[in-house]
Every structure is written in structure tokens, then in C-alpha cells.
Length: 332
Length: 300
Figure 1: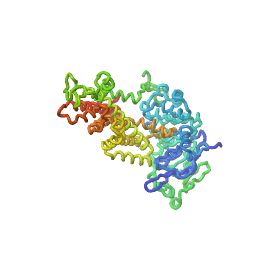
Figure 2: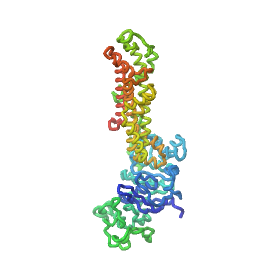
Figure 3: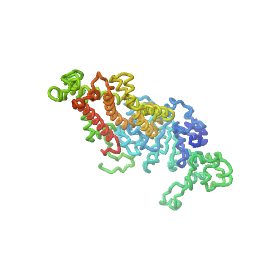
Figure 4: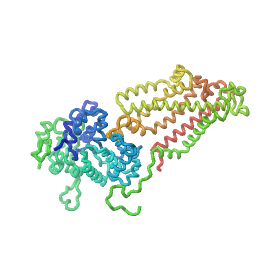
């Protein structure tokens, strides 16, 4: 196997609050290979977006990386000087944001905004950049690209804006693309289209993707590997099919049970009568102890869970790893 | 549309042809055209500017020359009368308007340049830089502006340049605070983050990403700053701190203020000129505000 495009090792991030530093992300490690997709899954507040921002070095002011390393193609992202960082961002790693409605500058045409990336990183002239922008609009399947290149964001629908964001992000053929819930703000049919598009473009460009999502369907379809985050800790990771089909951690299993299923056709017999939920909520920042963070909500919690620290990621034979003291007992 | 699209094409394939793109600036200009008061203000201002630019060439009397007897009332000898030295009032208005409007414009420009620079740096970077610059801004803000300007003019001489710079230097804190607030609001918005994620540096972010979005209130305040500067110049002149070698509306009022009862026309006409100019500028400012404030904007 070749060296991974992105390698995150023992990444910890903390927030400087009024009561001192609070851990937001603890000891997160994962690799993404060229052309592969890594999905980060978990509830809101689990540190998924913080991971993305840490990789892009875009953490908000009071957040700091306390330990760990992030390597992009062997280059140290955390140690990069400002100029180096600017050369990386948008060029070798880029990011798609959650809200296409607000992630485009309202005062420039979409052509200008896609072209800007190319002008900065590729040194293209304004004319060449606009020409390229039209090409990229075609690549992301925006109809009438020649006219739309002169459109302002408010003239485009949410789905089209997200396509523009994807065009911007992929304009310089980055090695790594981070997609932070790229479809959360879009309606269901458009969501599927955007995921299809991402998949197609990935096949073409061999870009490594870190996909942050709530959508387990998208994970099953798009992701090669999954890391499940809970309260800033990685509690289960492994190949996507393994984690989805044979979820071991009670939290992951809970997440899977929460996927709504249509009671139609042959599936109606096996589908549950009501939508499942995981009782309780993610412990807030600062209220996370050393023991398993999922403990208060876990139906399988035993004495061993209460008396010991958060378990290490225990490798299981399928290539997955899980952080649960009792996973061997409780896995069906 | 002739047929309903049935192919599973991407969204928008069946949508109407994209509308002609209208730049936000052009849209605001159109909107401005719909505000009657704004248009009236703009027309009046334009007339004033034309008069002060071309008037001196057409009306041959020098404003500092003694053109007739002191206190000649408006009439055939002097259309708007003469002042206590016998200088022509109409010539004073025409020439003085040039000085007054120039002082207003340049002082407002200084105000905005200093204010926007300070506010932008302060709001964009935050942290220690912000704290330091806010302290500087506050220091300038607590100085009584008229007194401070008087001190500057007294120290550096009663010339039009000094007066202009003094007005600019005492007025910028308001613009700085406004710009800072806009930058604070904008700097964490998604599209600024997205630009940063695309590799934009700080200078690019400030000048090309955040500033254009912060411009609407800055433009309005710049317009109003012109009016304020004109009033300020009038005030300074009234207190005897005008430039005695350059005719201006403020200077006319200031020099004739003791003779209001001997010749009402000596101060009434320049006073009216200041009033009309400041009113026109305010109307234009309001019109711009209406044009770029999305909450007041009518749908196209």
C-alpha cells in the first residue's frame, strides 16, 4: 500500500473556556489513501467539524491543537508557515462547507469566485480563469454554464450553489477534499445528486475525501472507511461495510437503528414499528470524564465500564477497531 | 416552456433560462433612482457642483475685491448685495462654494480613509490588535471635536488645508467604530471562511472579500460625513478660525456675523447655501441607504 494522502495521528484539540482548557477532540487517528473516502460519523457536538477545521488549520480563535500531527502527502500541516498554508489551502487540500447559501460571496459572480482560486494558485489570467470556470461548471453538471458563470449566488438554487462550491473546491485538483456535511442544507433528491457527483468526480480525480455526515446511507454508498466519533473520541472505526453491517459499539448500533426505514413492499415485515432513538444526549464539553463517554446512555453498561477509563481501540479480526470494554460479550 | 422535462437531469436543466446577471452595484443604482428624495438631493447637489465649478468663469467679480459700497442691498448694483467691506455676496457664494464643497469632500475622504483603515484592521484581526486600536479610537473620540480642531488650526495655521485635515482627524472615530462593527460581523461568515479555506491571505480577505460587503453603511456614512464637514468648516469660520485668504460660505457668515442687523443678506445667503448643500447631501445619503438596505428594498 502506498503512503496515505492524509495522515492524522493522535490529534487532540482543546477549547480555552472561562474555566480553563476543555478537551474537544481526543487522540484521533486516521489515514486516508488516494482516491479513498473516509467518513466521520456522529451526533452534533462530537467533534466532526472540529476535525475538519483542524486539518484545514481553520480552528476558531479559542481552539488549539494540543497534540498530535496532521500530514498531507508527508507535509506537516500543523507546522506550516502562513505562506505555506495559503499554498496548501484551496490547492492541495480544500473544503466544502455545510451551508451553500452562505458560503459564496454575494458580491461576486460564481465565475469570479471559481476563477479566483485558479488565479491565485495557478497564476491564470482573468480571461483564462473564467474559461476554466465555465469548464468546471460543466463538470459539476450545471446547465447553461456559459451564462451561469456570470450569475450571482442569489440567482442560484441551493443545490446549484453547492455544485459551485464543489467546482471551487476541486478547481485546483486537490489531493484532499473535506466535505463538511455537504448536503445537510439541501433537500433529499438534491442530496443524492450531490453525493453521486462527488463519487463521480472522485473516480476521475482520485482525490482523497474526508466526508463528514449524518447520512448513514451516504456513508454506505460513498465511504471506504468510517470513523464513529462520540464526544470527541473515536469509538469505532474500520471499513465502511464492516462498521455498518457489523457495528460493535453500542453507540454505532444505536445510530444504525435510528436510520428510518420505509414500511413498503417486502421490507415492511422487517421494519420496526417506530423510529428508534438513543436516549439522552452527548455530554457537554467539560462534563466528560475519563471513563467511557457513552456510559450514561449505554444499555449495556456494566461494572467494568464504570470502574475503568475509556477503553482503547481494540482491533477485531475484520479490520475494524472498537472502543468498548464489553464489545466481545454484547456483539450479537 | 414547451414540454415538461422527464429525463433525470440535474436540477435547473428544465428551469427557465438564467436571468441576466445584474451586478449588486447596478441594482443599487436602479433602486436609488426610485427614491424621490434621493434623486432631488442628487440633482440639487449636481447643480451646486456645476455652479461652483463653472460659475467663477462666468461671473467675473472677484469675491475678495471691493465691488461697491458696503451693505449695498440686493439689487441692480449687486444681485445679492455686498458685505461690510463692499464685497460681492453672489461672487462669494460661487467662489466660496468651491472651497466649502472641497473642504467637505476632502475632509470626508480623510475621515473615511483613516476610519475604515483603523476599523478594518481592528475588526478583522481582533485580539490584542483590536484592543489597542479601540483604545486609540476611544482616545480620539473623547476629545471634544470642535475644541480639538480649533487647537489644530491654531497650532498649524489658518489655511484651508489645515482646516480640512483637522476636520478629518477629529471625525474619523465614528467611521472606525462603524467599520469595526461590520468587520466583526462579517469576518466569521461562511464565505469568508470559505475564501480562507481556498487559500486567500489576510490582505485579500480584508480588501476583496470583507470590505466590499461592509461598504453599504460606509458609503452612507461617507456621504453624511461630507455634510458634517461642511457644517464643521462653517463652525470654525464662524468662530474666526477660517482661512481669511480663501472665500468660503462659513467665512462669509463668520466675517459678517456682527452686521446681521445692518444687512440681513450678508449672512442669510451663505447660510441658506450651507443649509441647501447639507440638506441635499443628507437626502442623497438617505437615498443611498434606502437603495442598499435590503429590508427597505422593493422587489425587482
